Image (tube, rainbow, N blue to C red; front, side, top):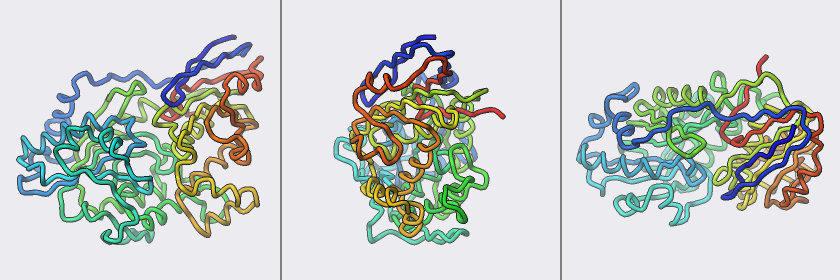
Length: 426
């Protein structure tokens, strides 16, 4: 069986020529209705369609100072720039809040700071002109201690989410550590201190063995120590309202779930599961996948999510062709510094001794890559640098494809591996 499949790569698309395969299965999200009138859908979500809380007009008073927490540029796929203007104008026109009493806080977690152009892409020029827009700084000295979780995480957060009415806006998507993104993640890690984030994320490692904790991972919420710790931490910050977005692979919104921080977010998770968790009856000999293009593949820290999802569709010891451009390299400042303990054979020991978030994403990537015999990756990353991780990299697609023998093999194609979660059936 022959086929040509087109996959996203950064801002471009590339075509893979598959020849002589026994069979080819393409995994796509289930079709969901896209929102054609975004303003009407937004208004419904904050009024009659509100979940688990009073309507937004009853929660914010004209004399309130309001902080709108919104995800950073790595989540710009959720197109919050189309929602934030609607929210800001609603608060001004319906709730009577002056623009000068609103601040948009970019939930960077430990990510790099935003450029002026990225602030516009995140919020829109209209919002940047009307209200104060600032980045969270996880190393700022004036963060506020709000309590300690039952697992011992000392929660310190940005002062702008204390003593003000807080509205969080997030995109709900499967997450490799927390089960699902969005919701409580807008607080931790979004606007938390570096030490708080480190304490929470260190729970990704198994407490008794040199590998990741099996309770942590994509789709997993029940008994997931990272998720449960995040949820408890978020309750220490009194979030007044939440807006949770689900986006189709086309980039068009197909769900807005607003209201209570936990209840509205869980409703968005249920919707996300129905759309993007795809049952498969068997794993394939070869997986051909793209993380999904920009911004999902802007660096390896973010882009690895496509490989992690796609690995679920691959037989142990199989072959993967993975498109992940990574123009920003590793992403986290310390990401590739973990190559040294990897090559010296003490990665697990070193990460436990000096845990960093970038270090764990590196660790998890290496852990998953070694489930395959070969992972050929179209990327801008230096091939020699990533070879020890288990990545056979190159920037010429034809050369990589020639290394793969599709003859008589079962092939699975995932054009949007950063969003779709294959679910092998028992």
